[in-house]
Length: 215
Image 1 (cartoon, one colour):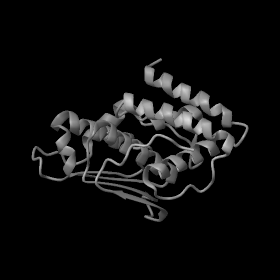
Image 2 (cartoon, one colour):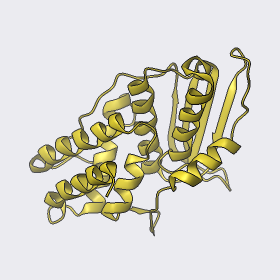
Image 3 (cartoon, one colour):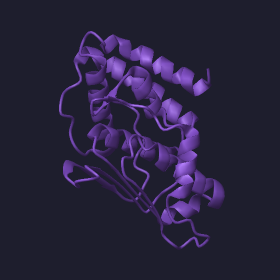
Image 4 (cartoon, rainbow, N blue to C red):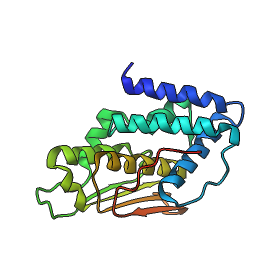
């Protein structure tokens, strides 16, 4: 078992405290709702975290934040959702395999050798932001951190929780790596009908202040 997977299993064990109080799916939904709000101050949580589960939420956020910090670019929340059985729009959620993420990241965007030319990344059905994070890591590896300062990232997904998870992961990645992007846009929208789902993040410049508590 890899070290990051061991950390994810630890996170899954922590949320067992919530199973009979509110159910795993509802707890994870509420947890992400609160964490995204604490990161941005946007979109207040739709429900309160039960008082007795606040310590669980705080411990969980510490574990997941540490995993994001120790394994930059890894889809920590995607792995967590998969391991704990969290459901996305009525279907089991499966994270993007790292190899596929690297391949897709290499195919997306407009790479350039000119540092002043804007780089763009667009991903529909972005899930937890795995491919966007791989794209960021590839740009840093190939061209250095300064390349990202002219980049614009646009992510879309029909699921609001997935959008919030992507937001949490990307701004933590940028903060942990001490890099900035020109603009980060994450939009909850049906990518086929273009029907909005009532959630839009447009953040510039990045990174935001790093916060790791939810509850």
